Image 1 (cartoon, helix red, strand yellow):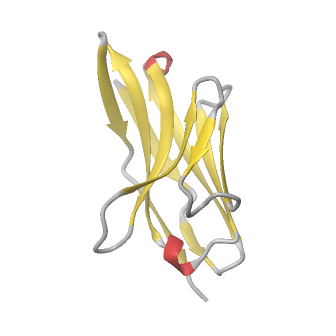
Image 2 (spheres, rainbow, N blue to C red):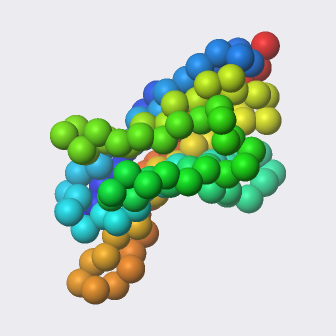
Length: 119
């Protein structure tokens, strides 16, 4: 199993910055890709950014140029740096790990952390 714990959420003003962390534990070696997703009130969960085990990253168009996903393998942690956030970035942010467990693709989720962007 893989256990994910998000942290770093909170309140930030538009144009500020916020950094979210996703700490992984357990069978980390099984993880292929880690992603950040978000879900705003009344909306479906959407992909924000992903990063592969080799460091390749991808972003949703809505956050390109503002958010950066990175990983620190020594700390088993993936970060989401949110620069110049906008009110529409307000959501619960979730960390996801795409892993292969006994040859079966398996997804693991964290409990989420809330990010609120408001003046």
